[in-house]
Amino acid sequence: MQIKKTILLTILIPSISLAAPLEPPAPSDNIGSAMYSIWDICKRLDSGAAGEKRTFQSPPSGPAPTGCSLNDILDKAPAKSAVGVSPNEVAAGKEYWGLTDGNWGLQTGTASAKTDPNLKPENIRAGV
Image (cartoon, rainbow, N blue to C red; front, side, top):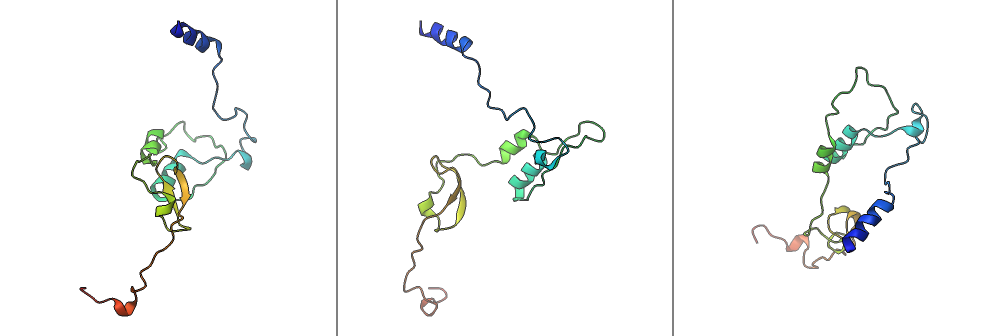
């Protein structure tokens, strides 16, 4: 009986769309509709390079490879890890990308710097 209810609900409940709005924010030649390219996203993931938003431009001779696919982007993107750090393990004020549940995304460290009072230049010797 439970399976029949699930199938019936699946058929009767309309699907929910999570896509971006279909209407453009501005005409295609307006800076308000500018977007980053897939290639810009790959370069950001590779090296942190800044992208450049561009308005729509017709391709000169039809579709061409972008040099980067959606699979490439996901392969470059960070993935969750059980062994990532927590904010209390990173120096206070330092930003890092958290990889664990509860600390995913851009984070700021909160750890206080603890120093040894005997760690002075005059107390440090080579080979000791």
